[in-house]
Length: 178
Image 1 (cartoon, rainbow, N blue to C red):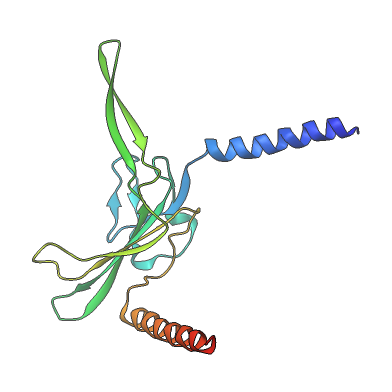
Image 2: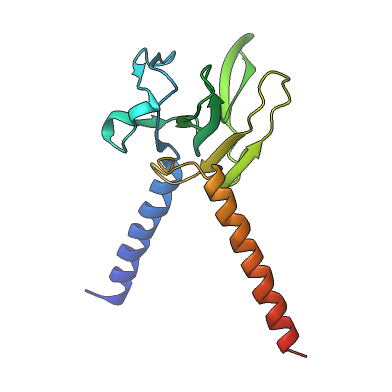
């Protein structure tokens, strides 16, 4: 095989990989809710997260999203015990709008690809009744929203301890430079 022919084949393969990845923006995410619920768009039952396992039962393809989301918060029950509530789904990124075509309005949807950043954010409630913060985690890889919550008390304590150790070692290193 000549070098030119090899180069042409390599270029075709590279273009196929690049174009194929840009044309298929849909991401697969785990999808479950606090309790089983009927999905509006597909009329299928969305399973509950209570017994979540990363299995095909919970997988959905997100046509209007490029991020997966996991939402979690602590809920205080009437007996005083606290439980962690988790939901997994496609991150909401669809922005509907209308276009006038041939004197008729047509509904279109734009996917806001820059709506989120990778990682978790904790949102504190602005509602007087709800007192617990909610953690939203966003990720952009297939089936990336299966992980555990990062805002429970032990995790926060470990993060604080790691920060103190890091600052201590950074100060020790800076002093050694003098």
